[in-house]
Length: 436
Image (cartoon, rainbow, N blue to C red; front, top):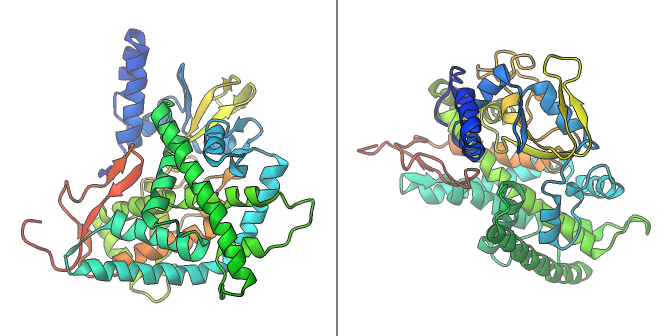
């Protein structure tokens, strides 16, 4: 959305109630459209009037305390909504699609060890170098298609050089991840064609990883993988106790989770952050000044606050596994029946004035706990350290370029597949041309 202010005077609920009385399917269509194109104003209305928005098909949770309750209670609000889809694509259970299980505890811990905070400085340097190379190549044209030429380009190279997963080609790896993630997180209607494309992409990815594992083991045995090791090599070299070693297939499924968790959300976050900074001229001026500072820490807060205004994942789906009283002890108290499809809305929670001081203001001094764009609780992002390094540094390198600016739509608008995944975002570079 280009608008900065969140108006709460909309007639969303009046229109929804009227549609429900006339044709429930049209009411659901209204809600889906608002959550795709008018989510900021719609969530503001819900927070004020129906903070736990119950419909016959799903329940939307919008206040900070209630969203964090849903995301913290994995034994009640599970990820069963998308787990089977990821399992089907990868040919076996994926640990992030398991709630409070030994598999989740053990394998998530292992992958966190493989992605240590100490890698952030090296990864930030890599992301900066890759970003500058891409921007140098685009500078002569006076514009850059930021999603494909910069954000996604850097993310794919990070997959190759840091994760150790180059793909048969970058384009093929990109196609695989888009297909699987689309089914897992955007296929709410259960479209069979999207599901079939995900399963096929997952099968191809796992076959590729099996071959890559054999090649990498042979290279490691021959001493042909020089330091610094990529994550895949690090994982292959790790010797686990027999009772914790679940075998090659488990290792490969967990490795597949790295590009699946990064190749859409990383570029998506970069696009959202850049757009939110650029639609605020005073913020853009401050961010450009901070980007020029040799210390990147002065800059990073601009990215995190921008993502509060527009996180990549605005809704996180859960399934209520047993009857649960949500917001007990408050006027919002609501019984959520077992089987309810629940949509927790971090994009709304981060504007709840009960938890976030002056939520409409762009402030760099906010405590980290009010920013929910990396999730919360049991399923918070396990790759948060590499993600922070790459996202911030790519945006920083972009804003260091002279004349970087939004272009007049349609070029300057973010084009999103399925209303979620950024596919195109053209920005100007250098001196402003005629007709812009």
